[in-house]
Image 1: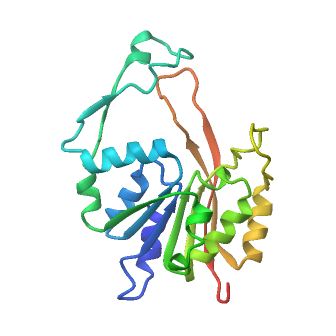
Image 2: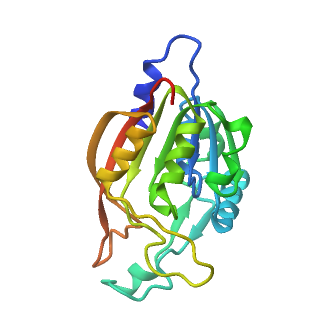
Length: 232
């Protein structure tokens, strides 16, 4: 959020609001938060389950804490107490309409590489924002090429996440080549595709964390901002 705000502050008059693409949008919270800054945001998600839940919350929330969910009900591991396992969480914590009102929010369903190969999506976004996304690819180079294609010249790619490649383990079904690059290799490929590193950092980030559990997972994530160079 702060990085996108910084990018927006450097834009010339008339270039704000930004046009932002969020691949792997999940439940849509990042999209809504970016929209709350007044930008035009397009989310993309492949999972039907994520799309169903996000559409319901984004479009049918009438009040704060309208529903109660029990995220840990079916997990019997690492609970200090039974009450901790059974406890509920009230959602939403903020009304989506309050977040999205300043900007524009849309959602496109489908595979990121296939959807954004369409001509209407070429070189149209000021920012691509990815969060815990690039390791969902069979071939991460396909993702990089697509990100470069959809960015305007001078546009920025802001990324946060680990490299827990989802397809690294053998899968049932038709064989599909999987490429798992190191962080160093990803940065090298990005450079060859015309992306220029502007900021690089390492961030500790919890994932699906239960703060009352005996176990918590935290990733040491790469965080960067790259810009699309001329001629890319």
